[in-house]
Structure formats: structure tokens, C-alpha cells
Image (tube, rainbow over all chains, first blue to last red; front, side):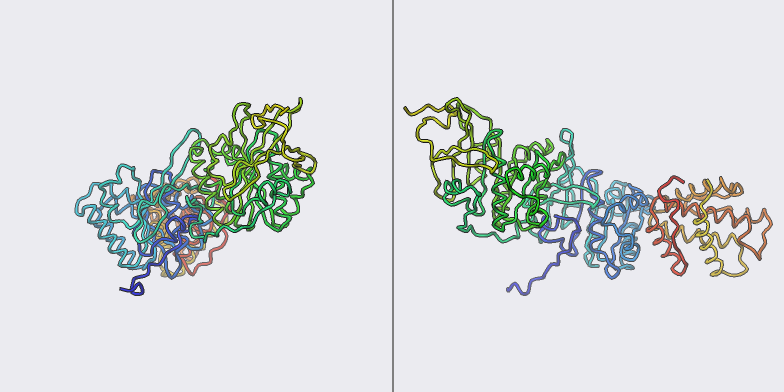
Length: 486
Length: 151
């Protein structure tokens, strides 16, 4: 059979930023879905967002409230969200309270009432909140499975996309007939980790859709639920094949050491101890990009953007004008209780907004420290996903990382993230002739050749300046305590 | 605390609207009851019977502080209002000036208090949109003086 004869399933916007990407482009029209989770996990808010995103006077939404939260209070609180549009009530969004029927009658009467209202309003969207409270009531005439199946069949036949909202524990996931009938199962989790709250969303199933598997972080703000896809919304973006362009640091000798510069789309790591000039080099890298017409983003965690720009000024680099011109954004990220995915989403949003070609993360240690403790365990994995996603669309990433100075070892990174990087530049102190001097060396370049030289450098009012030729008269430079070859 | 003027005005407008819509011979209490019943029906759909009954009971308690004669009125479990007619029978009613009768006064205060609770919980936009469904032809404008404060 040809694909032309296959039914096309329309995808409805979820109204939740980030969720469309997670569910595979939108919610399947006429699907019968369950939003499950513990109290306070955001189930009602998510359903409201879907309702307000899709309801119109031609295609209204019916929102059945049952026992549990008072309908008046629910409306009182929900209208605080920016997506809640009071003008849509009651023509486009109609709230119907079923609590009396649930209290006094059985599931058959509930189904009858829902049927009556649906046939009257012909809605495009139906929500039953909280569905679980009906289920807990001892039943008589109709068993639960029969009720669910009849409700699902009826609502699908009436071309309604449906959400049932229920409070469920995860152990109930098995052997529950409700979950078998549902086309889509959205599970919201909320856990406390040390002093922070971690919210995760999982699409346990979604028939007919290629949803993104796994646990996705979400947050509830004044705009409602915002979800952060594990793929950062970049799965649909076309990956740019790596080009052969080299990006200059604005330090000619360093560009030479890198065989012409950093290969476009690479992830570069500058590792060194405090004061070795990692941030200075990062600033020069971003400033050189702007000078060459490549917009950039700097994500800082340890100082404010004003201080960062001010320090650049002291190096003769203007980061103020490009910010005003929309060619540079300095993001100050001290998220505290934010997840790594949310933080990375902020970076991605900025990258996409200004069309950044270069991204500096200064520093990875600051980034990790800025995260709530519960999210630090995910740091490396999330960083990997972000680097993979961004470099895939041609953004070149330069990260700095502080490493402990050792005079017996030469660690590339204390975070074991070297594998995430295509290129590594190591800066370190050495003791030479009674002075604490600085050297740099290119450790690796995945894309090809690079200089093997160990070069001395200084940080001046013009930034990093590489001095002379390679240091040939010393042995054991990378130990930090070299000896003169003589 | 007395009922704000603008809410009394709004309640009065609803009563006048219903009085004009009804038969000329009907009592003031009947017109008030019709306003109340329409509110019960409209709000009951959203809040449920128990939800409306709770709001109405609170409104009646608040209204009694202003109109002690409402002491005989009561809200049944289904949210319906009873006893308003008794007030009317107890007192002299001038049929030519129905909106100055004690029953009318008490009824208006009760309706106004109910509206003030709605404003308090739902805000002006939602309250007005709910009222417009019930009284599509009535002129309903700003009534937000109590927004956000405990009644």
C-alpha cells in the first residue's frame, strides 16, 4: 500500500514551551491521554495550558472538575498564569462541576452527564480533573474498566482530544486498565533533593508519535509549565557538516599553534589553574569573532556581565558596543535551584536569538557550582548533550575549566570532561629562574595537526601575548619545575 | 464593613433587569429570587452545588451584619435560598416602589455580597464573564473595588 492512503494524524500544540518537541511535534488529535503524578506536580496547570492553547469558540474545550480542589479556587489560582485568558470563558473554555453527581451517583451517571455536555457543546478538547477522585469512590453499576473504555470510545468518536488527570503512585503503573486504554501517558514527578525541588516529566507512552524518551526537566513559572527537552529542541535541526574553516583567537602565535585556528564547530577546552589567563583567552576568542562578524555568547557564572565587559575593556577589547548591537550576549547564570537543562536552554535560546557562531562557557566549574546539588549528578551528561547539539549546528564552543596545579601530575581537567572536547589547550605555571612564569601547550586537536611546542606567554594590557619561540633550553616543563638543559 | 456602593449598584441593576423581565404583578422577593436562582444555576455549573452553597452561606452571613432582618433567610444544602418571602410578609411593602422595600434591601445586599465574594476569589474579568452568560442583555461594567480584600 502506498503511504498516500495512510491517515494523517494532526498534531495539536500543547501550549507548553518545550513540550511539543518532547511529544514529537504536538499532541495527536483525538487522542485519549492521562496526566498522572503526585499532588502539586503541575498536572492541572499543564492541562489548562493545553486547553487555552487549543480552545476557540468554534472548537471549545470542556473542563470537568470533580472532587478535590475547589473549582473556584482552581480558577482563582490558574488565572494567575499568563496563558490564562479570561476572555475565553465561557464561550471557548467552559468549566463544569461534576462533584455532586460523583458524590450522589455512580460512574454511569458521570458518563451520562459527560456525554450530555459533550453532545451539547461538541468540544475539541475535554479534560476531566481529577479523574482519580471518581475512581476512588466505591462503584456499583459500572466497573472502572468499562467506564474508561466507554468514555474513551465516546470522546474519540466525538473527535475530542482528551486529558484525564489523576493522582497516581508509580507502582500503580503496572496492571492498571486505565493506562492500557490511554493513547498517551504523561507522568509528572517532583522530588526534593537536599534543599531543592527537582521536577521531571516523562512521556511513558504516546501512540502514533515519536516522542523523546527519558526524563525531561520542567519548571512551573508565572507562564505555567515549561519543559526542557533532553535534546534541547535541536533534534529536528539539520546538522551542519563540519567545514574546514578555522576560527582565530586573535592571538596569531596561538592560531599558528592550532594549525590556523580552532576548527569551526569544535568544542575547545582551556584548562589551567587560577590566574593563568583562561578567561582572558576566552574573551579574546569572543572579541575576535565579533571583529570578524561572528556573533557570540558568553555564559559567565563567577562574575557579573558588567564586570566581565569592564575587564575586557582593560584589555583593549570592546564588549559593550556589540552587546548594544545585538551581536554579543553576556549571560549571567546563577540558577541556584535550576536544573542543568534549564540553564542550558537559556544558553541555547540566546545562541539562537542572536545567531551566535561562538559560545564561551566561563567556567565549567562555576557552571556546576551554580546548579542545585540535585542536578549536579546530571552535569556531565547534560553538558555532553548540549555540546553535541550546538556543535552539530555549527556553533564553536570554548569552555574554561580550572584544574588544581600539581607539580607531579599534568591533569587536563578535574571534571573528566576532556572526552567532550575536540581540542584542549593547557595553561600552567612553571618555576623558571626564580620566577613563576606561564606556559601553554596544545594537548589535542581532534581535527588534525597542531604544534607540539610548549610556549611561554604573558598576560598584558593587550591580553595574552606569546613570547619568543618554544622553550628548548628546559627539560620537564610540564612538571612545573623544569631543569635547565645545561 | 458595609457593601460597596458599586456592588450594590450592580446587584440593583440585575434586580431591575429581572424585574422588567418578569411580570409586573410579581413580588420583589420573586425578582430577587430569580436573580439568585440564575446565579445559583450559572455558578453551580462551575463551582458545583456544594461550592455554590458555601459561597452563598458566607454571603448571607455577611449580609446579615448589614440587614439583621435576613436572619430568617437560609441557604439549603442544594444552594437554594429560603425565607426571603417571610421578610416581605413581615414588613410593609410598597408595590409601586419595590426597590425601597426591606426585602429588596436585604436581597440586594445578599446578591451584592455574593458578587463581592466572586470578585474576591475570581477577579473582575472572570466574574463579569460569568454574569454576562447569565444576563447577556444587562449592562455590566466595572465593579472591582473589593478585589483582593477579605470581605
